[in-house]
Image 1 (tube, rainbow, N blue to C red):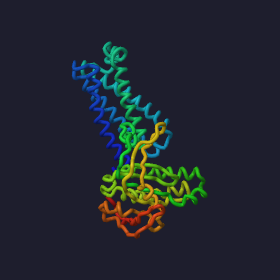
Image 2 (tube, helix red, strand yellow):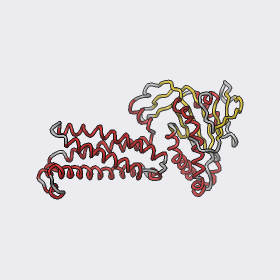
Image 3 (cartoon, one colour):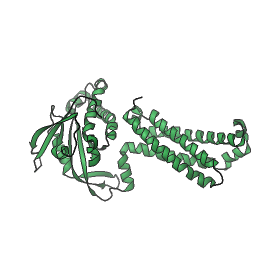
Image 4 (cartoon, helix red, strand yellow):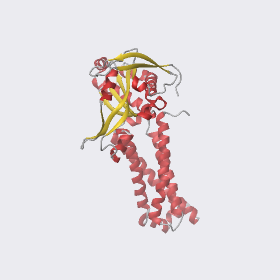
Length: 355
């Protein structure tokens, strides 16, 4: 079975979720029952594993692909209803089965027993459900917010990592959709917006897979950044653009049927030192400031139909270029608004399967 990039990512998340369940389940058992018996710990562990499995399966099968395009509140409500039902069913069934084994009773006998009724109405049943729902709700909300504002952005904002501005060395990839005027004239601005959104939706998993972070959308441009080490590792910052082009090519029938045109992309890569920090109180954003962004944008302006992917010499020298990619020296450029000369290379690929 060939898994999509999204499914591979969600499998990794499922392992993390299962680990959290195994760690947190004994905590509840301890506060609820202390060390009077091993049974509550076993029950809590089984419940945690089943809940983690349910969430992982749902995220892997149900909340994938085009489903993610539905409205935020609808998706959140669907998740809440599904997981609330799952929590109630799993906890109830586990507690019944546990009593069946411990007291040698059948299913109906457990339901009718005084001890089980006391547990449901007077003891920890409601508390257990609230605890489980709180954890599942926190996980679900976090997953959905990560998807909306970016995994690392959410963590950075909560932790205050960039509360104080700091200098960082980052790689910047500019991807630009061409023939915008033609597409707008042919389809209208709303259709163009949907067209651009479809492209972003399709390529996001490739960006995540290659350890990139979507920094900003500017009209018909997508800005992607990397920590310098992650970007040059396995030439991630280069591979991602060629993989995106392959994906766009594979989906060209859909684009043409929907919008009577196909996406044409150009890109530029550059790296350098910038200042990174959180700006704004009411609407906070993590922003980059420095000449690197401006230079990357100017390099993008040098792309042509033949040389549609350009990279600065400064960044190219840092990357161990895989054999399937070739670089061509285009010479020195005096970019608009730049005092220093920038040497630019064009990148192309051999049409073979990449790593």
